[in-house]
Image (cartoon, rainbow, N blue to C red; front, side):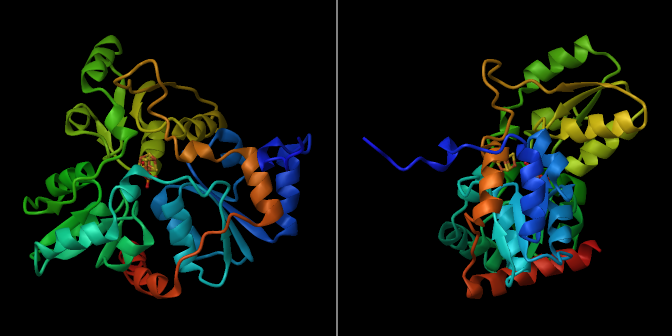
Length: 324
Ligand code: 13P
Ligand code: SF4
């Protein structure tokens, strides 16, 4: 029986990275990547960053095509900011538990129960949710964005852990949070972390604000992926325990190597030691092979209905303006 080969069964060039570089030029494409991508993808990218930096980079694109290596909501944000450019992704299935767990119609019903409230949405949400939001935030600017609505009732979606952290940091105890969470950051075990820190006295614990409170309580430093990388490089500590996806290790190690230094990097332990649950299964759907195909075929393409994009652009642009 003959069958059309699925793309992944195709023969790939021996020098896949070289072929990707060539295709990138041929297609006049820019490659934007998040820190949770595999090392080789990060090294091929024209720009690697956290969600805020990636959104900012998307406003400066001068190429015809954006090849976005991250998850769907990030590529969608790039498309909203670049309605006339083609945005392609290696794998259209690369979603996010936060975005997928917050359908716009259900969020609208939730918001309707709090009339007069402003809606601040974490960038980890769909274009439809962005379109109904007053302001977008990322983990690196959430406290500042919430303060923008000082004195006004607030609904925060979709991450309840980020909402709780922001509430503490901003001194606002009246924030109403949508009950979403990140399946990756919720996997870190506070109990196992306590044991690990006892074993490594002097180690600094760095955590992403999507973690549970019991993990954040043990952190010396809480920040976005960029913030964690910066602190890991600059901290006086030689051993760092890191409670976020271990894709960030690559940039930390690279920057340390450039400075002729090295440190011991340990990922915070998960609840189930037999699985790699602390790796984002969505981010890791992107592979070099799929990136090659997406640049070769210019698909799968990320599209956003123009009327949704127009509405969604407003709270994103407000965030970018307030973050400048
Ligand atoms: P950052 O904006 O900190 O990179 O976070 C993105 C994300 O999805 C964390 O899980
Ligand atoms: Fe979403 Fe969590 Fe993956 Fe980040 S790590 S993209 S929040 S599922």
